[in-house]
Amino acid sequence: MIAPHPMATTVSKNPDALPQLIGEFKPVDEWQAHVSRIFYGLRAGRVRDYYQTFATADYRLAHALAADYYARVLERERKVQAEVQVKGGAQSGPQPQPRPQPVLTVMEWGPGNGNLAACFLSHLQRLDKDGLVYPRVRYVLVDNQEEILEVARACPDLALHKAHVETLCADVEDLGVVKDGTVDRIFCNELWSDLPTKLLLRKGSDIEEEYLRPNLNPSTLLRTGESKPAVSLAEPHEAIADWPGFVRAFDAKDTQALKGFPSFLEDIVWEKEYRKADWKTVPYRKTISEFLKRIDEEVLIPVNLGAFATIKEAKRVLASDAIGFSSLDAGTADLTVLNDPAKPCYGQFGGQYSFMVNFALVEEVVKHLGVSSVTIEPQREFVGRSLGTNVLSLMDLLAAYPSAGTLQPWEQDRLVIRTIRVLNEAYQSPYQRRIEFPVRQDMPPEEQEALQGTLLSLKQDGVPDTIAYLSEEEIFMVIHELEGLGYDQNLIRAVLRTHPQPVDYYHLFFRP
Image 1: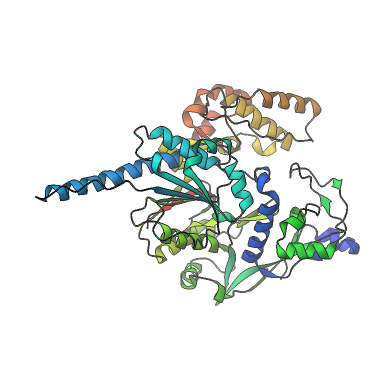
Image 2: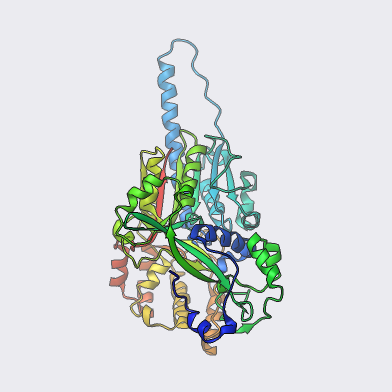
């Protein structure tokens, strides 16, 4: 039961171009973990070329997390102090001595380029005028790739907080080196979608899962242009001469050896088939089986095993009075969406699989592990609550452009930059960021020149990225200029007040 692939027609016409196997059929979660390890090993310093997150360059998510943490720590300590005073007042003997203030261990699992950590610590320091919280924070960046930790440590703004920052190279699904009950706060930003995920469906009385098998065509392999992934396959590169060596390196996830071969991740052809699920390797089988009964037959759903493992570890390492755990990621908690056979279970970025998070099933697993209260809310609402206003992402604003769907790709790029230029009249970041935006080569020369000029003129404390949050006030301070670009303010008002998309960014929070 092999799914068709876009290369199928070409392959059938050219027998010499048949893809060659570079692995055997395995469950999708196993191949996803395999390719993810290779992806980060090869491209740790260039991840932003392939996809961006709300913490890559923007600061508002980090500031919301910092404000939330600061308020929760102060509230907890007020309660502790009140309890001490009550106990002291009931005693006739010596009054209890104030207890020493403990270190506050904050962990970020999957730190990316370090921007979220830097902005969190900077904002926490600004909020903490009396020095009650920030001086005690020990911020630990955790990733299983040393290359990623090196990138995070190199974040310029993080250098300001060097005394508070540590790194730990470990799998977040099994943090054996971290003692039980020693962590106060955990952030997990757009990590669950990268962790091993099974794709399961119910078929009669059976549960089936998706299997993948990778193929590659060494005789026609083209370099995709290591400078930017958007470059089309137009630059021929030598075929892989040492094919056995390449296959061995791929099988062993030997990224050092793979760096000596042409870029290949985007050119893998994945065959698909469905087999009866091997339940021996699946935790929480009863919880998953019961959940699948609520899904129509033969409708594929993501089962985020890596996310489940992180929840179990978070519950173990968090202190009994910890502030708690937050995961921020793209997915849905809506059973109607999960029951839709056409929903996007995953996407591929630079050849790496990124899965939709099944927050509805994650919530069931959290409860299975004994957590009585879990909150799931749109990420946009969490950030907006911190700012005390409605917010939109820049991508939401661009999607509200009346003719967005009819623009050519280069026209869309031009609209993005023109929109940012207008927004910068109202937007001012507390950080200096030079926006990174590659100019498309298929853009007319005169447009290229004009766009390059606009890019160079953009202020460094303006909108930092195409993935950034904008406040309602910032948008409407320049609404007439936006209308001059073709925006409709009634559409923008409607988007500001609409519920999240069927698949959107959510914030899941729980305390141990």
